[in-house]
Amino acid sequence: MTTATYTTPDPTITAVPFRRLLRVELRKLTDTRAGFWLLTAIGIITVAVVIVFLFVAKPEDLTYINFLGATSTPQGLLLPVLGILAVTAEWSQRTGLVTFTLEPSRLRVALAKLVAVLLVGALAVVVALGVAALGNVAGTVLMDGAGTWTFGIPNVRDFFLLQLIGVVQGFAFGMVLMNTAAAIVLYYVLPIAWNVLFSMVDSLAKVAPWVDLNSAIAPAFDKQTFTGDDFTHIAVAGTIWVLLPLALGLLRLLNREVKSA
Amino acid sequence: MIIVEQLSKRYGAHVSVDNVSFRAEPGSVTGFLGPNGAGKSTTMRMMTGLTPASAGHSTILGVPYAELPNPGRHVGVLLDASAQHNGRTGREVLRLDAMTMGLPRGRVDEMLETVGLSGAEGDRRVGNYSLGMRQRLGIAHALLGDPQVLILDEPANGLDPAGIHWMRGLLRTFAERGGTVLLSSHLLHEIELIADHLVLIGRGKIVADGTKAELLSTVGTLVRSPDRNALTRCLDTAGITYQATDDGAYVVDATSEQVAGIATRDRVVVTELRNADGAGLEDMFLQLTADDAREQVSA
Image 1 (cartoon, rainbow over the protein chains, first blue to last red):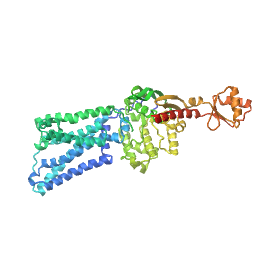
Image 2: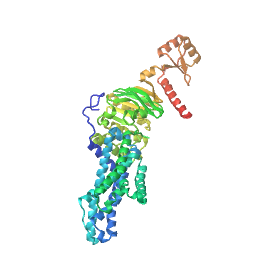
Image 3: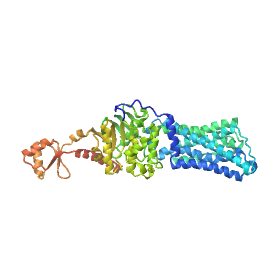
Image 4: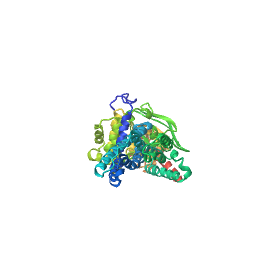
């Protein structure tokens, strides 16, 4: 109450800038035990799989792209949880009461959260790129590995794309369900069940890449990169599994009543 | 300044808040009083944009809440002290709020100090806090942005008597400096000592609204005599209506001067004669609570 007026808003106070919302959301990802250990686990497991791969793989398989491939599975499993927690904690821990009174524009809060999880997801991929490189060097020196570095810009792009799609999908599921447990379970179970259905029924196998995101992104591992058709598959399957839930989740977030109980 | 105009909230067929209008003025403490489930929290959530209103609208400092730039700097809101992440420390909770509002880091320590959560307590996780400590943290959160308006839902809940006394002083000072305070409670005695203005709500409707003096003036005078027959005879003769209280006194529809006058004339010994301060208010409030309780039993 440094101002003299008590009947109108202090005109010197301006809206909360987006970068401040972003900084707050980034901090929220790391300042709880759940968030801290999730990020720590992602880091430790990324290093661990590279070490394991170093010792179990055949020397001719010790290439940069294979090391990187090894990191992508655990990261692909864990990074989406980050996306889920970023949204669901506001409801399960009821912090939404504070978050949405300090910034009434829920769209801005959602955007800040999305950018925050994307930044952390991208950072995890950068770490994976570095750790895989160290693994490849160690493979050449210690295990007489092939040590091939064949890896182009398309590969880098694909790895980022792959992990960030997962992060956004987790974020979308978290927003649709607004419940940590339900979002995590459905995020893992639903695509797997869907994938099983489409890979087991022959007549469906053909359309699988169009409607099943796992089938759509499989070429990243099979062919080591995406080509023309693959992007169309990703676009269509991604719309169904990522963009649609994202839109539904946003709609729910914008209209839901924020209550304490 | 808070203006609530014809706010309503319907959940299907159930009307939770029904055409509620009231004002909370700068420089005063407005008590929002009603039994549990009367619609206080829903009204406060509508005022702060968390719950969409079915009808009506409200403004704070002349603007709808959602249109306040950086609202934490204008309005301190505490809707549920337990709605904090259990894994964060008290200091971290305030740190996040301060970051959002764009406040210097020192403000957090200052507020922890103000609410008595300095040092080690501020560094404990909120999950380990007692309800009283959470309320203190919640009040620190509400005051953090140095706002002109406070909206507090049941802030005294869980505070010990010393804590309530402390909060009373804090809110009084805030109002004396020109701020607007709206606080809710389901306990009359908790609120009547601190509020200048009372808004009573029951089953979603406003049932009384006025300054404490106005509401109290309508409730008459309390008079007690060892000779109850003589007193009632005297009142009957004067044509003054009265009602017996549980402990043998009478609440009469007259000023204390009038009662003193007729008692002296009729030589009735009076051992107690005063404003019925809140007895009527209490009755009105209990009536609301009782109606609500009955409804719950029959439902």
